[in-house]
Length: 92
Image (cartoon, rainbow, N blue to C red; front, side, top):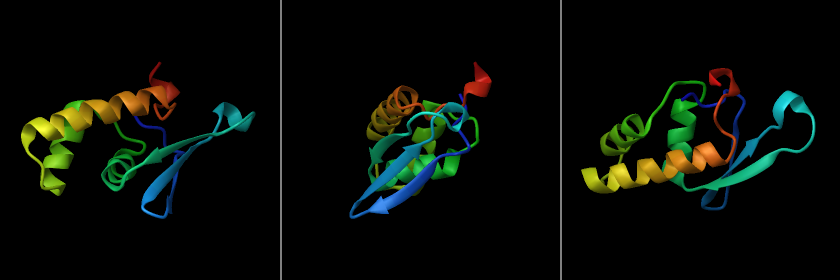
């Protein structure tokens, strides 16, 4: 999978708002709310190939989290990314 390269992230209070532009710039954009670590994952992998394993490794290398928790969080974040339209359509 590859994250879209046109994702915009803005910090609002303690959360991060991710604006997902609509395809071809027509219609509406969707908004996804992320916590700080999820926003860092999205920023890091924007435009790049990623997987739950890569995200878990990123979390382990950058946050004080054990392997099991990193894997659980990575799987949950990848599911959110897939369901929120943050995946590049070039791969499909």
